Amino acid sequence: MYLVDLHCDTLYKSVTRNIFLDDISMENRLNIDDMNKLQCYAIWIPDGISGSEAEKLFYRAYERLAGEANRLLIKLIDFEEKYSSQLFDNKNSAYFTIENSLAINGRLDNIEKFAKLGVKIITLTWNASNQIGDGANVAKAKGLTDFGRLAVKEMEKWGIIVDISHASDKLFFDVAEISTKSIIATHSNSRRVTNHKRNLTDEQAKIIAANNGIIGLNFHNSFLNNTPQNASKFDIVKHAEHFLSLGLENNICIGSDFDGCTLPKDIKGSESMSDIYEMFLKHNYKESLINKIFYGNAHKFFENFDNQRIM
Image (cartoon, rainbow, N blue to C red; front, top):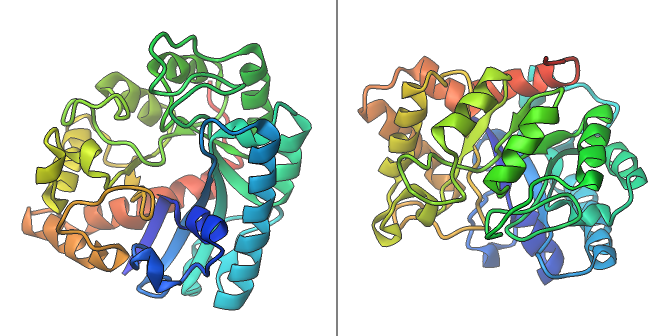
């Protein structure tokens, strides 16, 4: 099985607990060797810490991921390397990503530095506000700051993909208005299916798709089901089904959030991905479409991103 997973928090646990990426104390949410995959490893930056603390956490994560990639024979995609399907020839490939641009620490020059260290995606906010804008939990969100507008342009200049998962609605629309490249939602579901402010409205999903962006289906129980304790892997199909009804066949991907979420009871970790694949088959999805969701759409996006421009 091939998989591109747009988001997990395994790296954060590895750094803050000072344990290996494949340590079994992480409940095997993300099993390093269970399939051929490209995994996006996010360093989660908690709200409430200072910018300097966030920047230091970023560098600790970079050193940890580089060391673990060498130890575990993970192909870590660097700044100079172009994405290609040949990466699937490796058992494991990886992109380094940031969840919460607080790590930029108010310095535009850090964006270039981060890009040259291999950062491919930056999730603009977590749930609160930072120097770029307001997250989903901000009651009276103001959207992008002046610094945020400059930062989005700088990310695009250096080939870093702008991720609006966790963004407030105001921030989303501000980013969509000024972007000249595709924006993505690495780990967000449909708000029409599950009425949670972390999920995307139909309008937002259509804007992402219209500009050739992608959306990663999130496995967090509160984003899958309005009654979180009843969430199951079938809810993933429900969210996919709704996005498909909006015409997003070429935009749906996987953004599991392993090691950063509360999973439904019938999902143990990445070893359950084959069960999720079978769930789609049982609901009459063609293998060609399931393969698009599991890896094809993300593969095409990454392959084309560096050369794209949108109006």
